[in-house]
Image (cartoon, rainbow, N blue to C red; front, side, top):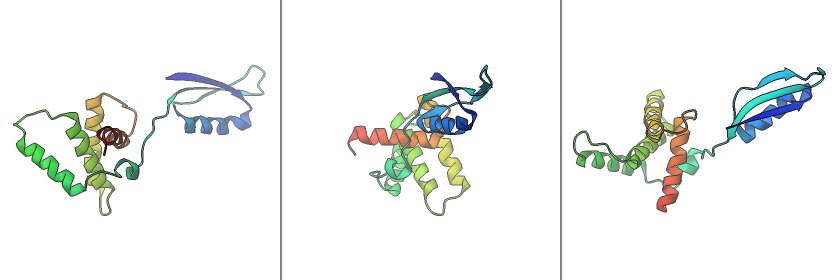
Length: 150
C-alpha cells in the first residue's frame, strides 16, 4: 500500500480521482485547499489493483457443474469423519456454488451459499479481506486451472 498526494485545479479533482480509482484500489480521498486557495490537495491511499476475472473467463474450461458436484460428493463420502480437506477441495466447492448462483433461475439463497463458501476460502487463505469473496474464488480458480494445465 502507498500514499498519493496530488495538487490540481478544483475542476480536475473528480477526473483525477476517477482515473486513480481505475488504475488502483484506492481508499478514501481527503481534500484540502492549497495555501494560495486556488488549487486542491488530494490525499489518498492506494494499492495495486487485483485482476479479477469475470465468471466466463474463470470457468471457461471448468468441468460441468454436475461433474463437480459428483466429485464433491465422492470426496466427502470417502473422507473420514471430521477430516479437514485440502484447499483445492474448498476452492472447487466454492467455484461450483458460484457457478450455480450465476445460473438462470438462481435466487438469493444461491448467492448467500456461494458467498459463504467463498468467504471460507478467503479466510482459509488469510488473504484479500477487503475484496469480494466470490471474485477472489474466481481469481484463485483461474490460477489453479492454469497451474494444473486445464
